[in-house]
Length: 71
Image (cartoon, rainbow, N blue to C red; front, side, top):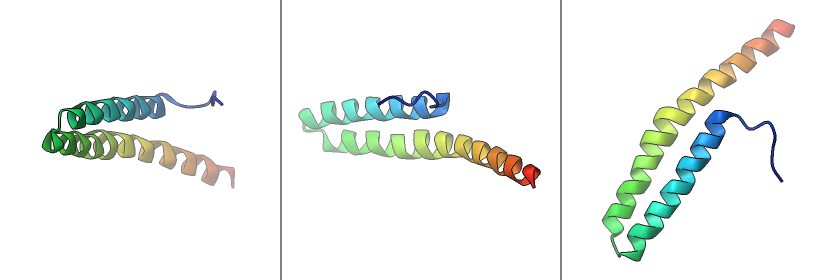
């Protein structure tokens, strides 16, 4: 089932997640556990926390302001 209302940032983070999974699996196939952990760390802190959560905050605040303006 595809959601027609998925925004660009959500598509972006899912694509980054899928790429991260592939890179981690490749590293683990080569028994490079340290490299795999660095890839996971980079995804969590650089992509998810630094970018996605910050962008999501803006969207949530906008929605909150819209709800407040209705009252």
